[in-house]
Length: 145
Image (cartoon, rainbow, N blue to C red; front, top):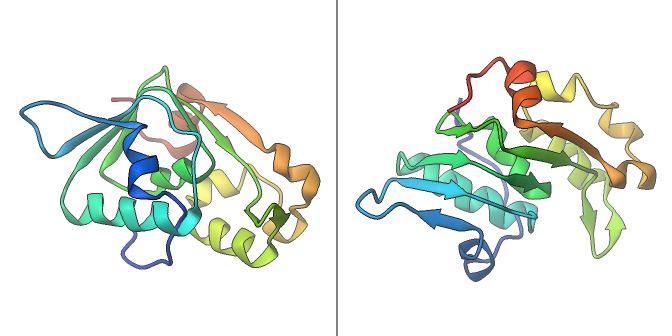
């Protein structure tokens, strides 16, 4: 179920490019070797564009913060070497309850079931939760790529 709507994240194109590697000869495949995240709305815009263009995305390393929004897209897979870090949303360095609710609406339900209710996310939650690629595969019941 690829997300068709949503408001933007904070990946600017230059920032995103340093994390994404395209395979030569295959314009519709992106490998993410490492991403520390970025802005929520800009990331959603990039991820929606990849989904609309049938770009296959493979996560092979750390995927944190806004990068974890990719878990909601059908065109994404990850390897056993991937890792994921989910944390509360912040705007201007401060916790943002509205952004937390938007984030929660974007993440897969099976993952949300493993996290506290978004209304309970606090500054303590900013430390977040980490999952290995294998754990995430089990949680979302999706095979590794």
